[in-house]
Structure formats: C-alpha cells, structure tokens
Image 1 (tube, chains in turn yellow, green):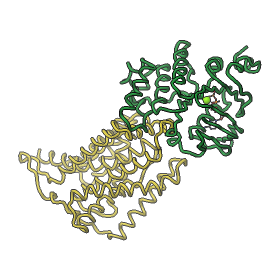
Image 2 (cartoon, helix red, strand yellow; image 1 turned 135 degrees about the horizontal axis):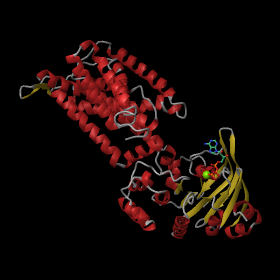
Image 3 (cartoon, chains in turn green, brown; image 1 turned 120 degrees about the horizontal axis):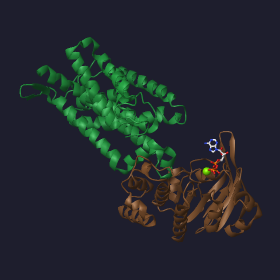
Image 4 (cartoon, protein in one colour; image 1 turned 90 degrees about the horizontal axis):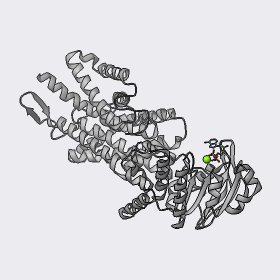
Length: 291
Length: 234
Ligand SMILES: Nc1ncnc2c1ncn2[C@@H]1O[C@H](COP(=O)(O)OP(=O)(O)OP(=O)(O)O)[C@@H](O)[C@H]1O
Ligand SMILES: [Mg+2]
C-alpha cells in the first residue's frame, strides 16, 4: 500500500513534467501545425535559468521560477523568429528540422557554458517532507510541483477560453485567413503562443530541476516522451496533454516499481500504443484544431 | 472612399486580376457581378490584404493600402464577410460576434454593437449560446454579416451573401444590407444573384476573367442587353 501510494505520487510528479512540456508542443501544433522540437531545450533552459538566479544571483527559488518562465518565454520568441518565421509557407516538415537544429545548438551552448556534469538547483522545500497518515511520504517540493502545474494548466485553459487573445488563438487554429479578416494580427498570435509554450516548459524545468539534478541534455528524452503524450492525448488538445502526461508518468512509475525498472521507459510507450489502438485520434482528440 | 487602379494579382502562375479599376464612393452600395472564376473573391481578398497585388494601387480614404497587413486594414475601417461565411464552428454565436470585435477595447461599444446585431437579426439573440457549426445556412449568413459589423466598419465587403439561401431569407438579407447602408456604412457587394444585387445598388461593375467589362448605374445595367443575356437569363 505504501509503495503503491508513493509510486503513484512520484508518477504524478513526472507526469506533470511531461504534461507541462507537452502543452507547449500541443498548443503550437494545434494552432500552426508546427512540431516544435525546441520544447525539450526550453525545459532545460528553464532549469538553468532558475539555477543561475538562485546560485549565481542568490535569489529566492520561488522568484526564480517566475524569472525562468519569463526569461525562457523570451527565448521562445527568439526561437520562433529564428527557426519558424523565415520558413513560413513551406512544407510543415521543415520546421521539425529547423527547430531540431536549434535545439542541438542550444544544448551544446549550455554544455559549453556550464559543463556537462549535473548541477544541483537548490530549493528550500526540497528536503522538507509531508507525511500523510504514515502512508505517504513526499517532499514538499513534489507537492508544490503538482499544485503549481495544475494551477498553470487551469490558468492556461481559462486564458484560451475567456480572453480576447485566447479566442484569437482558437480562431487562428481553425482558419488563419478568416482570423486575419477579424483583425487578428496572426504574427502576434505566433509570438504569444511560442512565449506561452516556452514558459510552460521552463516552469517544468525549474520545478523538476529541484527534485533531481540538472544537466544540458535533460530535455532530450523528455521531448520524445512529450511527443508521445501529445499523440496520446490528441494532437492540439490541452486537456489531452494534461491527461496524457499524467497517464504516462504514472504508468512508468508503477511499471518501474512492480515489474522491472530497466524497462521503465518502455511502459509509457506501450501504454501509448494501447491507447492509440483503442482511440486512434487520441484520448481527447478530434481531427484538427485547438481545444 | 476606395479606389483600385490597375490592380493585378497572381496565384502562383495563374493571372487572376488583369488590371482592375474600380471606385466606391462614400455612402454607396456598389455591386460586383460576374461568372464563377471571374475574380470577384480575389478582388475582395486583395482589398482586405490577404493577397498582395503585383501591380496597381488601392487607396482607401487617401491612404495607399495595397501593401498593408489585414489586421491594419480592418482597423482602418474595412471589414469583410467572406464567401461561404466561414463561421468558427466550435465557437458559440456570441464568441463569433466577439471575434468580429477583436480590436475593440471599449466594453460599452461592444455591448452596443451586440445589441445592434440582435436587433438586425433577432434570431441570433435566441441562439447566442449555440455553436456556430450547428446553425442553419441562413443563420450562419446572418451571423457572418453581424460579425463583420462588430468592428464598426466604414466599408463592408460582402461576398455572395445570398449563396444557397431560400428566397425568404434572401429577402431578409437584402433588407439588412439596405438598413446597414442607410445607417451610413458603404457596401461593396459581390453577387451571383445579379438581379437582386443590381436592384439595390447605386452602381455596378461586371467582371469577366479578371477584367472589368462594364461599369454603370445599377438601373442601367439591369437594362443592358449584354447583362440581361449573360446574367439575368433573358
Ligand atoms: N488559391 C488559388 N490558387 C490558384 N488559383 C486560384 C486560387 N483562388 C482562385 N484562383 C483562381 O483565380 C480565378 C478567380 O477566382 P475567384 O475565386 O476570385 O473567382 P470568383 O469570381 O469569386 O468566383 P465564384 O463566383 O465561383 O466565387 C479563378 O480562375 C480561380 O481558379
Ligand atoms: Mg468567389
């Protein structure tokens, strides 16, 4: 029982990380049909931005999360300018290459700047524990990660649903020309979307970086898994990315605990295949568009 | 109010507009008629900034807008109701209307325009919470027109508003166009239904394969032998 609850909680922590990175992917895919391979690097940059803020500038860890989201959000804008804007109008497959290339460059620049060895991102709550009925022991950092992640996702869905710009993003997802006829500045929607996607990934990096350690290649496997999450949840669906992320995280964690740790990374992909066999369009997916 | 001179547009290698000269004066209803593929939609999309002319100028209230981006053109006061309505199917009637007012910041103005839309087509008021995709064709056209009005345009471009509608609904749409114009909005109307369009228009242009072949008052075009034979089936 204890093992199960603890592994479930750990699975939710990992799953939330997948979900936050996958949301950026699914937003950008849902609106522009572009697969943004820099999403894993943005996650890594979020962790390093928080590290620089805490270790370099002696800043508060919680402020560092916000700092990382804004700073990396701006990097997301730069990435859009460099790897997407010059290629607009081309076949959408070229964006996989251009963003992937940029991701490789970014990872290597960080490797040059900070070295390849893992670094520790210090959080004041990383070693404080929560004990629920002697069944569940969890660091406060993990609880905070889950709460913060849920809050981000709720805020984002409400933003899409209720605000003028959120409505504009949904309109561009459905039909760019008609959206432009409504007076929506489509280029601005690109910027907002890439900023939000980058900020979500950065939050994940800054949060989970204080649970484990950080290193320049921490985003490599994550981008692949987030991609699986996006497919499993339904391409373009924000709630789907959330649900898919949690399912993947939990199945890896429980599979690792009860079956075999060596194949932990495979369980998630097996679950993805099973989901797609039952629902080819993904859990919450329809054909196209943004939800 | 708007003046196109020598406008030429290509789609890749397809030469779609071959030097269009066209003027719409303030307060007018001007109609643009022509067969399928003549280039009517292309003209409206060029005015709206979705297409870039390779030659020619478009002056709107004195300003050259032939290279201006679509969202800037809307803010100058030109709105388009596109062919086929292009309602956002997953959004409610209300959300579709609010998208029409995307650039309007003043809540009072938005509320007032929503009321005006509901007054123009009371049917929309009843259906404000319904998804756009579930509306009938006529209701979608009403919604598209009202959505186009939400920005408070000086010039409204209408692309085949009568397409696929029953006669009774067409009558309502015609009444709406008249009352929009009476309220001070200039209208450029593209139509296949030439009789209806010319009857309500001050002036009209006849388009054939990317060129203006006739331009005259609505009444005189209705009498014109060429027009009667080609577009009125007489
Ligand atoms: N996206 C496109 N790519 C290539 N050619 C196009 C495109 N859109 C229109 N055309 C061509 O440009 C010409 C003018 O088309 P346009 O849509 O303006 O005609 P229209 O007068 O609006 O016709 P309809 O009454 O059928 O709506 C046609 O020959 C058409 O085939
Ligand atoms: Mg047309």
